[in-house]
View 1 (cartoon, rainbow, N blue to C red):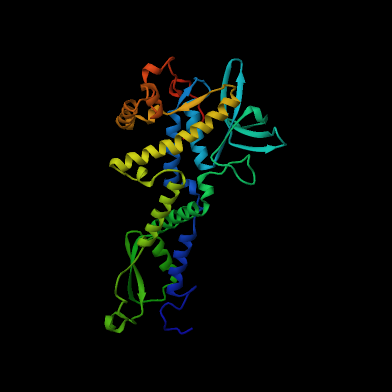
View 2: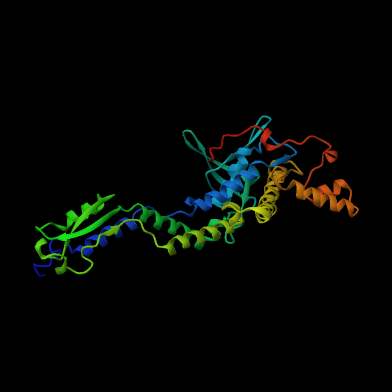
Length: 361
């Protein structure tokens, strides 16, 4: 190796030193998780909070807003939820599990771990003692669930990787490298350290010019141009992240405009579709399992609290049905309203029941 090339000594040349530093920072960090992205959290949050305002008919103290919220988060993040039905005297509560394993034939049993302040409690519970809710069934293991993040694993994985890569680029040192003529036998390790510690500073790198007296005319044209090292993600990467996020939101059953600031009639229609195609169907699935495991035939979850945004539109639709010959009660039921005149007994919402500390966020 020729002695006169100014970056030929030490552990490698100038380009290798910078490339190694950038590659090391870009590859650092844990394997990305789709559940850690803002899109997944936004979808889980809106579904969980929508389930939490359900009206439980007939009222049941075990079905609390906290439990419904925990259920919503679990369904989006992992596609399944299991709670143990605990009966102590006249009190019934639902204790959410952290992990569980099914075994045996029908009726199956579950080896369930539930959290405690001292660690975890492990119990072997019969099928009749477990409330099991699935977002969608796993084809190979129908007793396990599959959520939108795993069902659309390629898309959610792409979103997680895009987030990780952009985050890694943003965390890189922000600095400028200004080439200067070589004045001594400086090791490339000093340049590497300068890059790592040069946030917001100017780093002087060696120039191919032999000395200051030779002037810039003796150096390559770009040698005296300041070069920036730091976060400067290409527009294509940002667009890819946004596109993948919209697809993940759609896989969870939501319109991207609903979470990203839609307005007007289109936003109201997106919200109506979310309530009628996501929240209410989930409510029916949950109510069916609860009615069976809590021995409460006819138990139902309704979502009048989510209809308030469209009260005027529903009233107009009900009025049109009455003019067409329907009774007011029939018209109100058809558009999802619950008229006071048709209420034969006071309803009890989940909000009025006792909250259970389930530890969900």
